[in-house]
Image (cartoon, rainbow, N blue to C red; front, side, top):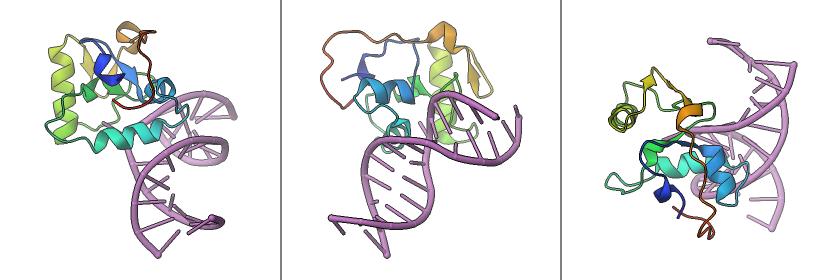
Length: 102
DNA sequence: TTTGCGGCTGTAA
DNA sequence: CTTACAGCCGCAA
């Protein structure tokens, strides 16, 4: 469980996650997977963004707005489709790094 | 089983 | 900012 370990106010990228889960380079896979998550999921999917601190979900979409709202409520400054990744970047915890899954 | 295509990407030009 | 291309995975043909 990696995604579920991301603390509030922290961010990570698809590529990062993929790498941490043992699928380096499979960022797209992560993204697609997240997009298939149930609506009542408990995972902090909104803390997963594209590289460089970009929100790949466009505003004006249910998911996009939802994400922005949640991020802002966690104290993250979101401007358009950008955030200051440098300030919120999440450094993985070298703990129970099993394989795979959220 | 192999091939092709598309996706919440990533990096370089 | 806009291509272009590289990988990787899942799914359908």
